[in-house]
Length: 382
Image (cartoon, rainbow, N blue to C red):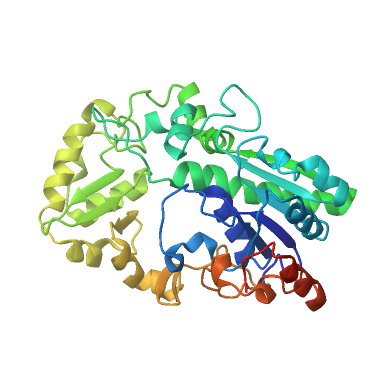
């Protein structure tokens, strides 16, 4: 039983950050029911059900939301929910008859979570976009990458999931806590541009202080500093070092057998390339495994650069069960961890078409209500 056990959430099926936020709540023990379209939306990257991992841990109900009768079914479910998650363009839920005013009238304590890229307002609010576009607008993308090269898209981790999913989940939990005191629900407007910009708070401060150049790849944590970078070993495998602090940097030089007097001043940016050349030469003398044996677990701020399979096999990752096998698919375990209200292992992802109606609606409707819904023909589920 996770810390959100007893919280009921309706998720309007979407792509990207909204399903991930719903997964985060489900991982923590919330009872989440996903409402799917009866036909494929054609959005996002298609993958087999088993591998669509952000759908794990919760059942789904397929309805034709263009039907007023189906809308009433959803409103009935929302009437007994603590929160709703939707990730459509602004105005879509209102056109479906499921906008926040209607839903809050049905359930006054409801927390209505809205996930978009650009936000519910502003000149771009109705435009299509994806992670890369949103982080580009915030200044984040321009700052990521090596000097003299194009910006490097950080997968869709920074926008969709860090700036989007995490902020929506955080906003929902904050609003749920406030509703316990006030007895009133509210709308959470979670925009990826907002969340990504907020993640850049420290970086904006560094820039304002004159401690960060607008030229990417020339700063402390963007590959500019030779002591915060990735290096190639004798076997062409990679390692990472990040000893920003002088005492950790000194420990690195000691273990590498390099006299500190032979290195340029650590924070003299004009000498960073000279320092990089010396470390690159040193790291080329041993294999990654040899560097791991020497440096891993020390205070030099070191880790090997691992691929997915190597990460799953690493002793530290295995000891903490950071990655788990669910239905034959290796995937991240729920996070963070709790000392008492420990979440269980999520169930494998299943779409509505493969979920029995009675299973999807368990805890939401009585047997008689489920059978009545089945008789209406509003859902395709057996």
